Length: 355
Length: 132
Image 1: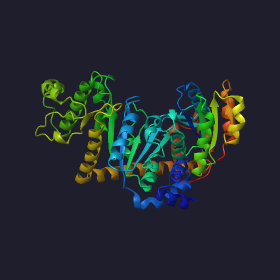
Image 2 (image 1 turned 60 degrees about the vertical axis):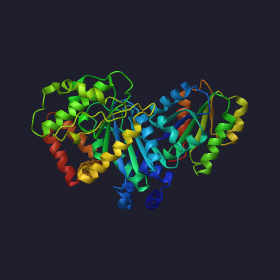
Image 3 (image 1 turned 90 degrees about the vertical axis):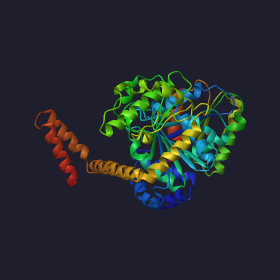
């Protein structure tokens, strides 16, 4: 049954693709094994990650990007992740709502996934679901993460190009230089750019990127934290929607900085430019070797994850719960210390001992 | 292995009243189901494509415009055309008693009127969902 289903996926059959992804979501091990049938298609699609805070316009932007890629005659698949309830396990998946305009286009496949307890912005099955979509012949796979805060960065493990969506009015420039989410963008988008403060956000992101690049190169940023303020006059000329709000390029390699774009997803302003930019960043990465490096890194990270899951499976299979309970009680009664108990648990796990 | 029930909640046709659909969506969520909310003014074609792409077990339709006799059967018909007759379809909204036998004869599994306790809907799905 699984081989048959995998074959139908390779034929691009929508129902087979949909079912296969469900099996992956449900953790069906045979389905995971059957994925070996997709070996020949791995790496064929460009994986575009869209991430940003709740309500920043990720879904609307995704909807418009589908339109862009369709106009280039690419087959497009979307995986949109929304959070599961930690209480009921249920979920309301509402991203599709904004993409229904493409529902009847046979060149578009949209799938909503619930995060099912994962905290990194994606669900466990996301990385595998995209392989199924790739096998079915989708050339662009857009992954929209759950609305993220500051540290949900699993998207870097699966996407070739990460688009980080910001909006005006969320905070000051310190938010921009914090560690985490702001470090993972390949393309930065300031959406809802028709609102007040959009240019300021663009400047702050730019400043962050310039500082980061300068620090990486081992020199301090040219004019201290005030760099951008001192350049405000030059920057004033780069405010139009859709144009890359580029700071003046010096001889410091700043031309390699991730682009910062402005969009109004609702009206589609700036989306053409964003689409073109996503494609050109991908091509650039492919040519300079960054893409290969990144995909290798992704495989490494995923391999680690999968190995950890397999260990957890083995733990469950071998009645690990019983052992866990006994050890917990021993720790509670102060017969064992918690670190020693954990060592005992992992030792048993590695040996594959039951109870 | 846990199998989540996936439900499409959709509003076919032109009325803009989605309070009921949203309440049902919430109730199903709280019952542990994954609800794909597709929003207002959907065509049967859009709803059916969504059901196929999302691997839905259930399609829940809400209508208050009076066009149920046309739109509900059309959804069932399209699902059958796509070989997806295993997807459970039921409806709700403002639907006259007299129309219910007709809708049922067209493959609508049940019709829930205003005031139906949400638990009734949840129980209905759990007992009637066709896929294991």
